[in-house]
Length: 125
Image (cartoon, rainbow, N blue to C red):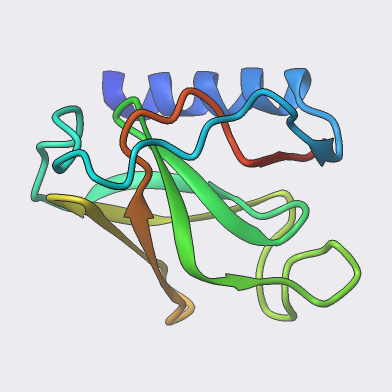
C-alpha cells in the first residue's frame, strides 16, 4: 500500500466521521476570477476512493476541493444504481483545474476546481 493511498484512506475516513448530512454554512465557493489552483499538480492516475454516500457531488484531491460537472444521485440522497456506497474505488487524474475519476465499472465523473475553497459545499454522513 503506497503512502499516498494510505493517507487518502485516512483522510476519507476522518472526513466521514466529521461530516453530517447538511449544507455547510461556512463553506466558500472560491473566487471565480482567480487562476487555476496550485495544489493539484499530478497528471498521472492516482488510486482514489470517491465518497458516494449521498451521491457524487464533490471531491477533495491533493488539498483542493472540486465540484462535479454533473451531480449524480438517485434523487433520494444516495449514489446512483451501480455505484458502491459509501465509496467507489477507482483512479483520479488532475490536470490543471480539472479532475477526472474513472473506475473499473466504466464510470467517469469530471470535476472542476473551486479555487480558494476551504470546505465542501455540502457535507454528508
